[in-house]
Length: 330
Length: 76
Image 1: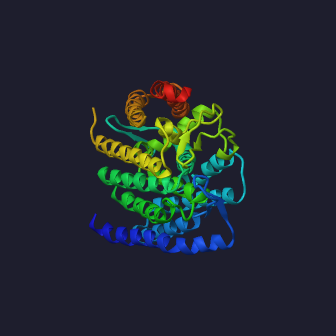
Image 2 (image 1 turned 90 degrees about the vertical axis):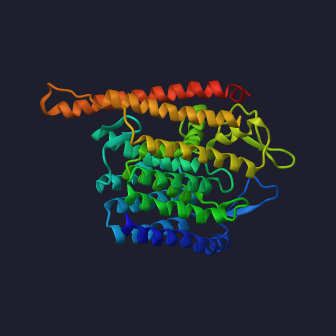
């Protein structure tokens, strides 16, 4: 445990400062190339640069390579390759509009390094009831997990700062849970994800100076999923991610098919005269987490973001309780 | 509304705990014999079918819970 402190400190500082220092020049570069999109929740024609994925992936790769130098774990290599593949998939989607099935299928392929490196344990651990051995089924779980976590984080990236802020809360909750279940090495490996998200949040928070884009959101989500698998904390990770899972569930159960957000015609949210967010009555629009939050009345973008963060903290607490329950059995 | 969201998340959590219990209780001790070397494969296929059925059931219950908690908002 003591020998893990130095790698933990070095990798976390590296992860944070790479993203913190690299994002401003990235913003300038993207501005110069006019790679901007309209921030639809702002009054005037505010244009924001994207994608922020490149600074996020550099922070992750460098910090994880540092950890690999110290720990020599195959799990770290699997995380680096899977996360990098998710970044490439997201970057392709940032530059070119792809079909609704592109990301899930490509992300499923991105999960293969975890299988190839054998960086998993096919015992699925449940709170209160111990584990179940599912060798074949677990392979399917790995293939499904990365697309689910990647797209889930991507689908919650709808307001300034929400995706990165949510990831800060979810990933630190997951790290705490990994410490609770005494998986110290993977807990250390998971810490850079929280620090990368925290550094990016500085520029992504309202009013955003940069959007993560698909490359940023898929990178964060895929790394989260990869950590859950190699750390053997799939159920705990799902619990910490519940608000985002709820968002995807509401979306899919109202639309009843897998589509890109841009293919949806109906708008779930509109603006009031003073530019507060308000739920629409559009029956063709999907039911989303933001729409449900706004069902009680109009709120500012910042207020909606804080409600999502409160839900994330609540889920983080449930995840920590779940981690404690892992040690208890009937 | 916000309390409804917290309640729904709590409901999802409980369903995960209960679902986990069912999976471990049913799938854990489950084994197949009499097919020789295929025992392991057939056992895994049956486990997969049971697990997928449980996931479908989980989504169905979640859907009912969603309609019950958010019935007013979803109608509008």
